[in-house]
Length: 252
Image 1: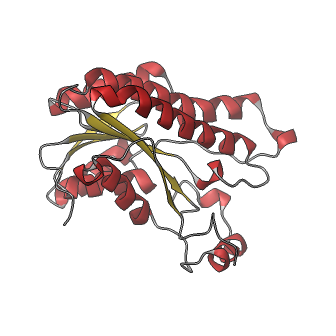
Image 2 (image 1 turned 120 degrees about the vertical axis):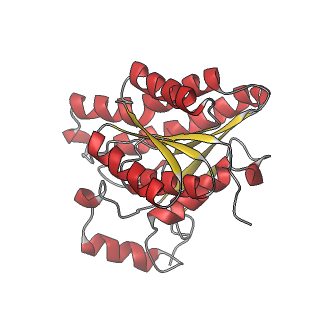
Image 3 (image 1 turned 90 degrees about the vertical axis):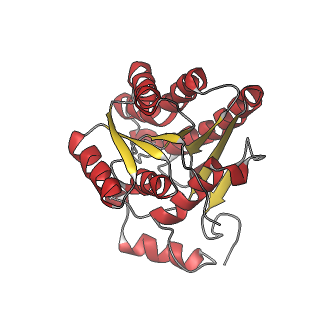
């Protein structure tokens, strides 16, 4: 049975495209009212229009989540416009792959601001507005890079490893407030944002190394996120759900 999220209000950061957009669309299809966050107004408007055209409920949340003030305002706006907040998906990211000797301060700081600090500030803001009796669900988008790394990904792998640590620590503390905190760990998923870091040869090697014989899709990841946000995962918290077709823990 599809998860019934009728009456719930969700916020998805970085939902203008890719995994975030697919997640916002699926949450709405399951009955939730979704706050669609991104930095660019046109991306947000397109995502909201797509959801409403399919009969779902969504509203725009144009905020820069790279600052504590920005993610805090996004969470508060979602809670105010929806009259509650039940689900937060920390999905926003900005990624650049650089070798150890090439890492630059501006790249490091931006990746930390969006990919790590925003997760912490988002959890904090959500915990402040989620009803302690009703509780809620927070899902952080990590990566299999937190479990198995590669060259030129020290910053990215470190950030996603940190997201897993934050997920477990937040779950331990917020369980008393009936807030579950989990993470998903996608492997390589073709999206608009990852296009610049992909090529056909690398994709072919990944497909050949994956037991399921294909790359993941944004819908594969969205399904996992929505499951963790739903009541079907009501006793699941502090977990990292790997969604990778088996590539991380097998050798072909």
